Amino acid sequence: MKTIAGVVAGLAFAGAVQAQSTLDAVKAKGFVQCGVNTGLAGFSQPDSKGVWKGIDVDLCRAVAAAVFGDASKVRYTPLTAQQRFTALQSGEVDLLARNTTWTITRDTSLGLNFVGVNFYDGQGFMVPRKLNVKSAKQLNGATICVQPGTTTELNLADYFRANRMTFKPVVIEKLEEVTNAYFSGRCDVFTTDVSGLVSVRGSRAPKPDEHVILPEVISKEPLGPAVRHGDDRWFDVVKWSLYAMLEAEEMGLTSKTIDQALASKDPAVQRFVGASGDIGKMLALDNRWAFNIVKQVGNYGESFEANLTPLGFERGINALWTKGGLMYAPPIR
Image (tube, rainbow, N blue to C red; front, side, top):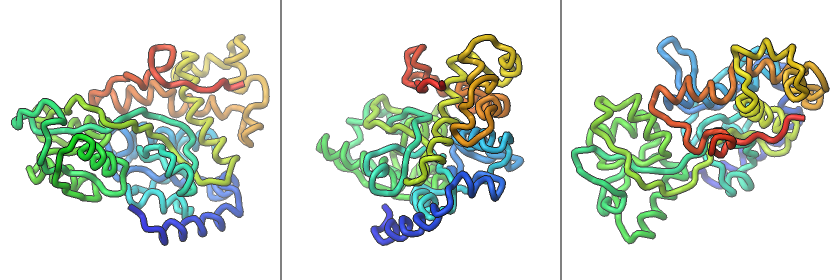
């Protein structure tokens, strides 16, 4: 975890950064500097050509589309779990979109504001199938790989203490190194968010079928983007960029159909695409801010299908509220 001195220094520097609003600074330099994972398939990872992809990357691109009308105006800063908060506090990045859990401590004492949730998750455990383990309750005495500076590390200790079990931690910061340690047999178990387990198994395991994700989900891990405290305009821009992707899916607007929506007679659709009203101006953006997001990035469902579905993810609780999930956007009106 970060030292108190590091947190205080980051907060002090952040105050200087905020002398100019983040939105103004972003517009002046011509791009959004986005903090992302060093490489987690489905969330944020560069492909073989160095192009960043994932649902967190799509949120960065959505903000760029809203601000500039051009989703490509993003630069990415890969961050480990221990680096991410300092990078945002200090102004190194404008936005942290890095599968980060929203907690009260982070929301109140680290100088951050979480804008919403783009993936509802929970912590789980993955083990080699050959161990024939069926439940986390069978892990007493196990050697467990875990990353430091995460809610995962704290939840792990709480769970084993509550169940009167012991474990031997293997603490490694970088995702690639911790997963290599697990796949090489250095530890019996790998624990992180279930989304991370699915992603790692689907993209890094030499033989995915040889690894089992246990049924227990031991925590709530609402993952979402964060910005710095004290800049409400930028907070609004990032927040409503996320909500625009959700609202577009609920309204049935996709990257392929959004052009036709410009001629819609539906008042809600007219407001969304900027054909009527001044919602964009309320955000200090162009009135076609939401149109540009959907046209260039897609709605939330499109992003999920492109990035997560191929890895074996199901919508589950991340489905829209109209389909039994938790995804719900406030009205855009």
